Amino acid sequence: MKKRYSKALALVTCVIMALLSLCAGIASAEEKKTEFLGKPFPDFSLTDSDGNPFTLSEALKGHEAVLVNFWATWCGPCKREFPYLNEAYEKYSGRVAFIALDADPRDTPEKIGEYRKENGLAFPMGPDQDKELYHYIGGTSLPTTVVIDRFGNAAFIHRGTFKDTQEVERVLDKFLGDGYTETAVLEKIPGDASTRAFPVYAARALCPENENSRKVLFHLANLQAPIPGYIVLEETARLRIEIAADDVVANMVVAGGADDGGSVYIVKLLDPERNVFIYEQKIPGAAEEKPYVDVSLYDNTDDFNMEPECTVLLFRDEACIGKVVESLKEWGYGDVTFEFADEKAENGLQAYILHVVDQDNNPVGEVAVNFCTDASCVPQESDENGLIRFTGDPDVYHVQIIEAPDGYSWDEGFEMYTTREYGEWILRVRKD
Image (cartoon, rainbow, N blue to C red; front, side):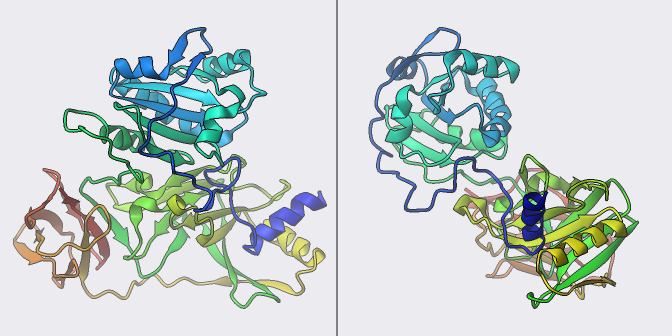
């Protein structure tokens, strides 16, 4: 009990970090061995869990690329990633060969076969004999995925999970088609280049939208800044995720305090009708051993930056808070107090602001948009910093892109609506 609470209390004081994507440790930049990229990948053969032979050179004869995924039966992030690989396999199996290699010698072929069947996986799976290939790629964590192009060269490696099927597809598309005439190493997962609009705020924050919620500030003797939290008198909190204008939206992740340590890209949480990011998190009651849950916003997991940009604690009622406060005192955190705080709703803006960027978050000037109501339209153009500042009267404006400079494009039919109050958004166009 004390060991469990010790860990929980460390979370309250923001000393430990939530688990995100990795299973066997976090690889530093020095540990990411990539010397093999751009070079011929060793030909290998194995018998998969269905008893079928798989040979790399044979697979390349009938496919444009081969995707090799390293995993293990005990790896939670691997299991969360498999549905995305499964969906990509169903779409690309005629052009890309898939093989999932179990990098744990303790996982027998029979165990691998049972795992594949239980999880409804369509692509072949088999053992990485004596972890030879895993050692060859400098394996440091699971899952890890390697793509071998049509020329037999290793052209891509990703250590950690794919966050959705679209990430897998964007990687594979780089190696397919008649335009791929020579090995080109792909250094990172290509970003989403679709035209999107994202709401932004003065600072990052996680704010419950539940009507029955109240902000709490915890004061600990050894911390200068208070720790924010909320009482939410419901089983599930609906958190509005607020990000800043200079954030790279495509990389940002939110993670809840669930037992599986799951995380999700915030772009997948966009409510298109309201144009806000919403994350739902169940909250434990006072009778449970850990009477709170922590939710954290992370900046860039691609760089293995595991420090949260902001964290909030969620409680079902005041009894849960009291239980945590007493435990903090018991474990030597000194005088621990909390107070209720009122939040200011006004954002202080005096205009509708658009930050126009490309898929790599670079500002784009000379993008023309219309701010329209039923009565009229007002054209506006982004400056050299990608900034559009429209000072029309507060209203719900229908915003459409009407022109972009040479070398840039946008998705046909894209449109967005502002709120009636002044607000701020990132508007993404595509650099071709």
